[in-house]
Length: 348
Image 1 (cartoon, rainbow, N blue to C red):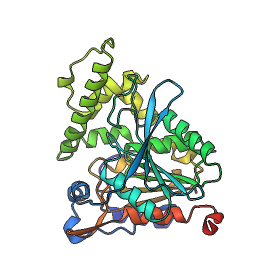
Image 2 (image 1 turned 60 degrees about the vertical axis):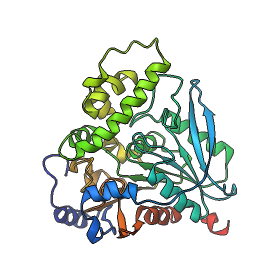
Image 3 (image 1 turned 180 degrees about the vertical axis):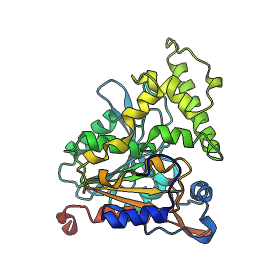
Image 4 (image 1 turned 45 degrees about the vertical axis):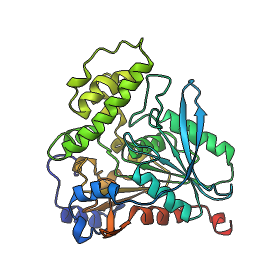
C-alpha cells in the first residue's frame, strides 16, 4: 500500500492503520494556522531557529586512513548519562538548525549529544575521493563501536535526519546487535528513486538547486585536492540530484548507476530487519518525497513505531507563534527516548 501512484488521502491511510492495528500511528503533531504549508514548515524552520549550543571538535582517524570529525555538545555530561549520536542530512553539519536545536534539547535533559560529520561535511575536504551516501554505514559503525568501547556502561541512542535517517535504517538492519538502545529516524527518503523524482519537480526544484550547488562545490574541492583523479564529466551539465548520483555518487562508491545505488540503499526495503526500538517520524506533505516512502504497514516489525502526520514539511514540525515558534521534534524525540533507556537510568 502507498507505494505507487498519487498520494492517498490521509483519512484513508489512518483508516487502514486503525483497521489493521499495526504500528503506523497518526502523529500528535498539528500545524499552527500560519505554518500549514509544507514549504513554510521546511524553510521557516531554518530561519526562525535561535537555539545555539557550544561544541568541542574531535577528529577520529578511520581504519582506511581517512577521518571524520565529531562535535561534542558542551559542557559535556558525566559518563553515566545517556549518549545520543546524531547524523545530519545531505550537506548538513554542526551549524544545521535542526542539529543545534536537538543538541540543545538533549542537553536540557541532562544527556550528552555528539554529532558525527559525514566525510567532507565538517568544513575540510577528506583525504580520499570517497565521501558519503545514503547507504554508507561503515563510518557510523566504526564511530558507534568506538564510543561503546569508551563508555561501556552508558546507554546510547542515535538520531538520523533525512539522508542520515535513511543511512541509520541501513545500519540498524545490518547490525541487529548494535550498541544502540534506541534510534529515531526523521524525514528520511526511504525510497531514494521516488525522492529523486519528487525533488526534481515543481517548487521542490528550489531545494534541489540549493543542495546541488553545495554538492558540486564540495566535489570541486575534492577534485582540487586530488588533481590526479581523472573524472570525466562536465559539472555544469549536472542539473538534478539523480544526474549527480548517476555521474558521481554511484561510480565513486562502487554502484553501476544511480538506480543501482537507489535500489541497494533505500531503507524502505530493510525496515523489517530492524530489531532495535526505533521511532520513525514522517510528514505526508514532505516536499522532498511522495507517498512511495510510506511503508506497507504489514512490513513493519514490532520494534518500529512509525508516526505519520498530515503536515510538517521536511524536518520542520513547527508549532507555536511565528515570533515564538516551538520545535515539536525537540519535544517528541527526547520524550520517546526517555521511555527507551534502561531502568538504571532513573537512578543515575
